[in-house]
Length: 165
Image (cartoon, rainbow, N blue to C red; front, side, top):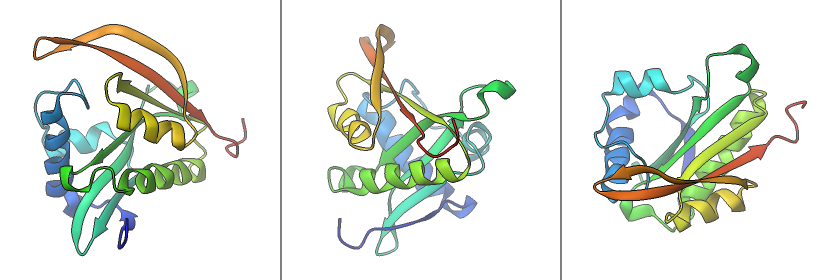
């Protein structure tokens, strides 16, 4: 996507991050969340590092961040991926740039496994993750019902080649 730049996410990005997250929630195929959290809750649930935004001409196109999978020390190198692209920027390479940068940042932080749980019908997100080196490791059938529709969730992971495992 011409003119896309990536930069670290800051607290000043809270409004844009939550607005794009709300767009993802509204699709019904991006998350089981049904309400946009407060910035304090969003911030507390994500790693302080490995947060990135994509923008063009001063407008936020999307964001990516990591969530720890567990507080147990044995899982300190494992995180869950979130990548959200605004509706007007979808299918224009912003997601690929964000996920690629998130992988790079995670390896600099010595994370050895990134995982993602993606609705089976979210073909664009599945293709994006596969293009960035994620592989399917399982499928959870009818994991949850959202708005009266049951969704299967495809589990993917990416193992670092440089984080020393």
